[in-house]
Length: 83
Image (cartoon, rainbow, N blue to C red; front, top):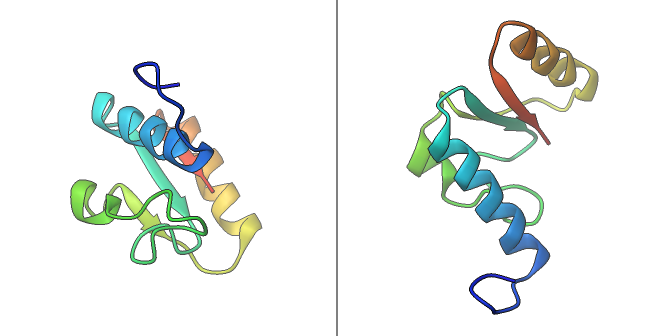
């Protein structure tokens, strides 16, 4: 619930991601179609315009590749959100 009102799961995820991105510039999001398309359920729609391509990264269809990149980023002190 947000301000005493129910929100959809999608809107809650979108708001949580936005809050994390706003509050810490080490946070970035990567995954298939999370940038230009806005993600599978539009949870990241508009994020690429709001936060830029450096923090919202579309990845190729290679889950093991971008999960590995996320692990490397975390080891380097970044805060990746891998979808």
